[in-house]
Length: 309
Figure 1 (cartoon, rainbow, N blue to C red):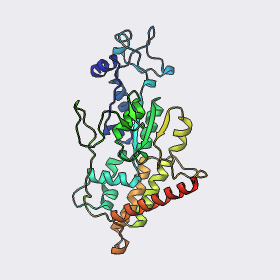
Figure 2 (cartoon, rainbow, N blue to C red):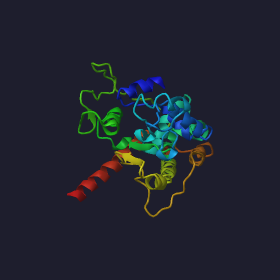
Figure 3 (spheres, helix red, strand yellow):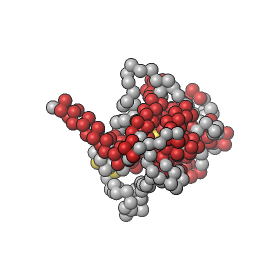
Figure 4 (tube, rainbow, N blue to C red):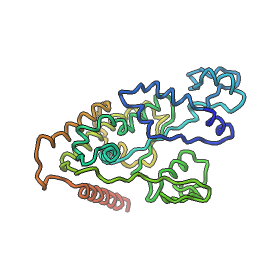
C-alpha cells in the first residue's frame, strides 16, 4: 500500500500488471475475496468530510485509510482506475500458447486440450475477466492484439491509449521509447520481451477439429457481448478491435456460458483423437493453419479495399 501511496501522492499514474489477475475467473478461487484483496493494496482515501464508505459513489476504502489519508492525498476512487485485458486471437492460438507454457514434453496438442487444459482454463477467460471488473464498477478496456498496427509494442499501446498523458507518434509509439522487444534505452526502461516457445509435441488436430474448437471458443466469447456492450456499456470499451466479437452473428442469441462449459466442449473435440486414428492427410500442420489464416485475412482486406475504392 505505501508504495502505491507514495507514487500516487506525487501525481504519478500507476500501471499494475500481472498474468495472475485471470485467476479471478477460475471457479476454484473465491473471486470476491481476490478482487477485494487486489483493491485493498491501492491508495484509497475518503473524500474531504466523508467516510469513504458510500458505495453509490463507488468509493472503496478500508478502516485504516479512511481517517489517516483523507487530507494527505487526492481522493482515489474506482472511477480513477482502468483495467486492461488483452484479447488474443484466433482463440485456439491462445490455447496453443497455454500448451507451450504448461504442457509436458512430447505431449501432443490434443492430449493437452483433453487432459491438461482444465487447471489453466482461466487463462482463456479474457471476456469473463473483463466482466468481473465492470461488475465491480471498474472501467475496463479489452485490447485486441490482432488489431494493433504493425510493429506496435503492446506496452506502447497501453501507455499511449490508456495512460494518455505522454507524447506518442501516431498514437502508437511513445516518443523517446524504442519499440524493439529486447533493446534497453538510456534511462534504464526495458521494453517487453515476448514469450516465444516452440510446440511441446506434435500438432495433431485435424482441420475439422481445429475449426470446431475455434468456433466453440468464439461462441463462448459472443455470449459475453450483450452484457458487456449493453448492461455495462458505460464502463466497457474495446481498443484496436479486429477479431473480438467479429464473428458474432447479429440475429443469433448466444447463451452466457461458463468457462467450465467451454473447456468441456474443447476436451470432447480434442479427445476424439484418443478414439480415432488419423491418416497423414487428415492432420493439419500448424504451418498450413497459419497460411490459411493469412490467405483468408488478405482476401478479406483486399475485398474491403476494393469496396472503398
